Structure formats: structure tokens, C-alpha cells
Image 1 (tube, helix red, strand yellow):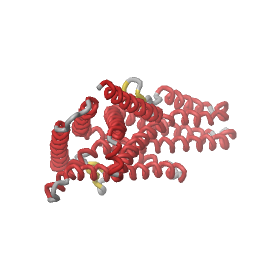
Image 2: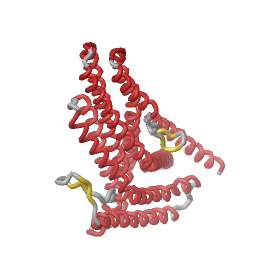
Image 3: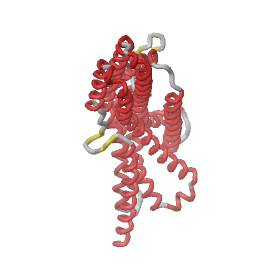
Length: 373
């Protein structure tokens, strides 16, 4: 609730929106933001009353403000990009319908991508349960309708960042799946050309040229969607990485600071550790599907080289293959967040190394300040 003001009409097969859906999505997000601000204020008031606070604890607790700002920024992001996301969804689904009507189903491709999607669904379900339990822990002061309503609002607004990531993942997933079918179809066309074109079949050559031209157009349209999607999603992916890193570092630091509380509350320890682990896996899945999408351009170039054996006696087909290859080389997707931060699996591993490094630095700083005292 609150991710979008559009809904999908099954009968018409289109996304629709009206004033009621727009007002409802806005109201849910605003009320959730108000509850979140109240919770942050209460947390900081409790923290201010703690005696003998360590200087580093003050610094780390100030990050709670930044985490609240990230949630508020996610709400603003939804307001600004809701229509653009829906337009990209429409175009990708239209291209998906075209691919279904022209490509034969492949159990290998479908199985690979369905496993990835179902794994993502299971992570999303667990993260929502974790957010709901955390919200209940914070706000459970006498259970009544108003308390339950506030818990749901708080869980919903904190879950928005996960939903935005899932929305990006879903569109990359669909695009990457179609790309895999394009690669498979090109390989099948190459095998067909090797078998039939040596007999100088001009009609067959024109048919293959037409198919390659259509595949090039389909690929180009998908690439256009990806470029627009990259512009919309890169800031949110960057902020989610930052948020997960900070949460993990704070968790490691507090685990070092208060080991006695961890031993007393095993259930809380399991919840925190599992949530942080699933947060990192969730980011890895997003980086992985983006990496798979970028890798497809290299794989497709290799698939086009399978036509090498027939180019000497099929000039039109040779020109079509060269046009496709030039397009792939010039339009290779360069998915970046900002500057040198790539959206791929390598950045996830570098993020894990930074997490360990900053956790060690923080703990060493804490011990150094204690020795000075």
C-alpha cells in the first residue's frame, strides 16, 4: 500500500488511476511518515536520558535521523516517479506479450528465472514480517484499534524502500528473461541457416533477415526501457545500500558494546541477525539480476558469431548480422549508480568488505577512547 496509485484492470489489461487511488496512496504514506517521526522523537528522548553515554554512541545514534530521512525520501521518490514507472511497466509488458507470441517456451530459461523470482518473493515476505514485528515491539503499549493501525502504518512506510527495490527487480527480471529468449532464438536461427542456406534458398534468407530485424527492434525497445529505468532507480539503490551498511555497522558495534543483553534475549538476536542477512541477500539479488542483464550483451554477441559459417554465400544475412553486432557494441548497457559505483555483483562484495572494515574501525575507536579516559 502506498507504492503506487495505479492498479491493473484485468478485463481491459491496462493500468488505471483515479483521484481516490491517488488520495489513498498519498494519505497512507503521509500518516506513516507522521508515525515514523513520532517514533524517532521518542527514541532520541530516551537516548538523551541515558547517563554516561559514550561519544561514539551519540554519533551512531544520530544516524537514526538519516534513516528517517531515507524513508521520507522514498515517499517523495514515489510521488515523483509513479507515472514514469507505470509507463515503463506498460511498455515492458507489451514487449513481453510480443515475445510470448513469437518465442517457443523454454523450460530451462523459465525454470531459472522462476527460481530467482520465488526466492525474491520469500525474502520480501520475511522482511515484511520482520518490519511488522519491529513496529509491534516499538508501539505495543496496550493493544487497541488505534495501536494496531499505527503499527500497520509504521510497518508500511518502512517497507516502502523494499517495495521500490522489488519493483526495480521485477522490471529488470522481465527484461533479462526476454533477453535470454532473444539469445536462444538467435542461436536457433543460426542453426537453421547453417542447415538450409547452403542450397542458396533466397526465400529462406529473406525470412531470416526479417526475423533478425524484428529481434533487433525488440532488443532496442527493451534497451530504451532499461535506460529510463536506470535513471529512476539508481538513487534508491544507492540509498538502500547506504542504509543496509549503516544498520549492519551499528548492529556489530552494539553487539560489541552490550554482549550481555544479546545473551539474555536470544529471540531478539535471531531477529536482528536474520533481518540483516536477508537485507544483504536482497541487495545481492538486485545486483545479480542487473549483472545478468548487462552480461547478456556479451552473450548475444557470441550468439551472432554462430552465423559466421553462412555469411560467405548469404550477403543480406551478413549485413543484417553486422548491423545487429554494431548495435550491441555501441549500445552496451553501462549500468552505474554514480561515478564509479557499478550496479553489479562486484559492488555487493565490495560493500561487504567495507562493512567489515568500518565495523573494525568503529570498535577500535571505541577502545581507544576508553583507554584515554
